[in-house]
Amino acid sequence: MSKVSYYTEEGLAKLRKELNHLKDVERPRASQAIGEARDKGDLSENAEYDAAKEAQGLLEMKISKMEEIYANARLIDESQLDTSKVLVHSTVKIKNLTNGTEVTYKLVAQSEADLKAGKISVDSPIGKGLLGKKVGETAEVQVPNGTMKFEILEISRG
Image (cartoon, rainbow, N blue to C red; front, side):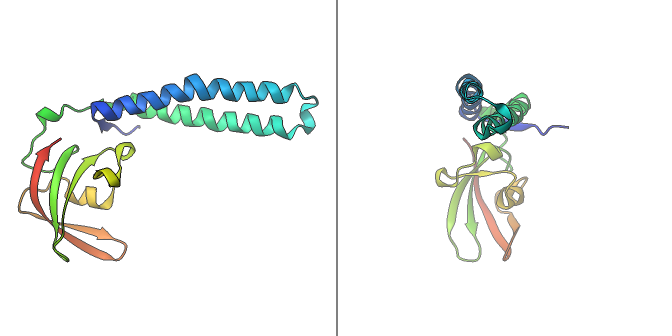
């Protein structure tokens, strides 16, 4: 059974663009490399041919995996999000109760995660710990070096 992932319009468009690039650019390039290697003679002793075939196999595996992800992707209407608790695509302002720092994160699908842009995966330890929490609640997150506690300060859309 495949896992459903929720995407913003931007994230879904990026996924589609990457999939199209693999199919329309990389796949023909791999076929061309096989053809060029085949033209160089005896296939039984042709390492270039073997490498090109292996690269094509890996590419096809990647395309297949991305097609599965895309088939199970769901577009989320951010205007309909409930802001009473932390959900996928919520923007959450949290306070680290250990050191007092405040940080704002947007919870997104694994493939959209980008820490520099403040987007963390709902599958990450912090993302999992925040899901379902309400403003004022404390999320306890298990990390490799213990437990971190975050107070939920604010929840918003987008």
